[in-house]
Length: 237
Image (cartoon, rainbow, N blue to C red; front, side, top):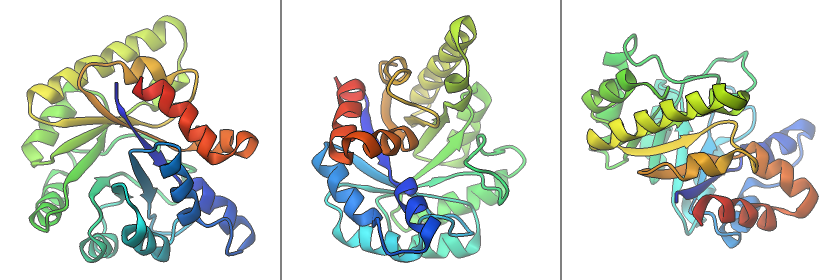
């Protein structure tokens, strides 16, 4: 079974909706730890639509579990990562107009730029994961790029049902096996919730799942600590 990374971006979304100081993502991270989260994930976007610089710095200082910083491959954000030194970085594609990340990185088209950033971060002792599509080509390109990890985009799996979802699950399984054979640690995330997560968590060599929206939505009803614990029971047992 996989480890559970809890993405707390949407706690910050609620804060930013009214421009208040609450709810504080740092408080949410503490509750997620109590609920059994294995790591905390935040996405510091260029437009700072939810998580802000202060959140990342305070989390890095006070978290007792690893901090995974999701980020675009831009000079400003790379500079912040080099300063803060999170436990790991996940490079993701980012568009201003999107509601949430819509797919994996364009590895072939952006190979040189991404490769340079991977080397820069890992030379600073920050392990890098690449958010990619579950394809054999992306596994090979990620390994060539020198990344330590990949995070497989599960958004398509989450949107499908029936036989189509089973075929997508098989694609994720093949990509996971290929990544493992290439020496990559495999994570997965996007669109996962309490009713679809177990088949992904049970894939051999699946190391971490990063889940945010469904946990925060559940937390509105039952509290964050319980929502994390319920997800951890599905993911880790």
